[in-house]
Length: 333
Image (cartoon, rainbow, N blue to C red; front, side, top):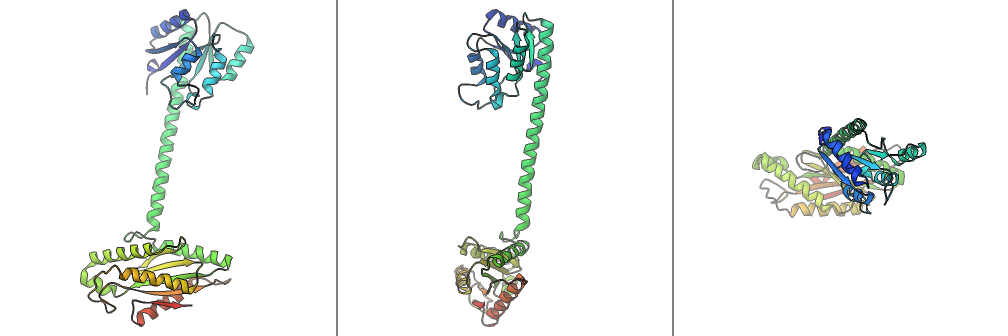
């Protein structure tokens, strides 16, 4: 943090003599960065006010502003400065030879924080400038703390989002995990119940995955799970369809608002897509490549029913697919 002596002061006065006197007094008091302007318009240029909104905070910490000037009086100039969001925290101290109450009220209403009387007294000038700059330094410290808190809050929000994301996906395959499926199926079941619309579920199992894992090794087994998961996810084109890893080599798809026939058709497209991967599987009894068996169930939820019934029906259909040769889709409607 800068010291008050290093802070920047802008002296605005249309009198060359007054500007020079105040600048000299400030410099003798130890202030190293004193700028001057002979009019409100010149001050606006220094402050970055060019008829448009100020886009960058200027390097000015305090404005000493004469009330009586030719092009624009100090009160109006102060009001214009305080209209700019990036300039509002810059203290404005009025320099005036007037002492009437009405002038002071208007100046305070425009945003001025203090007054210095003319002719300028060195001790008064030093005291009031010191007070104004102390306020500016404290304001800057507060703003810096607020910015740090905002940044920390943003970082915390991002961390929470990432934590939520990580807690909702399967660490190996990158698709939704069982926990997320449980939440989603409950949500879709309740929606289907309210709307009296059908909901379908497809239970998927990789055929003869244990022999695959034993023969090719766990690393290849993990790669197989990743490829199959990605293939299933990429095969789903309807916006509402949802895939998750159910556990082990099992996956599950939720099909909102769909008939059993259409759900079975999509499930078979998924099965064919996995077959088209042509992942060699020497120990499979269902073919030369990795394949999947799928059980599909569909229902229109009734009051008092549960989605666990739908899962059981889909699981029963999957069992039939596996018992009747695998690498196929069986529906249970």
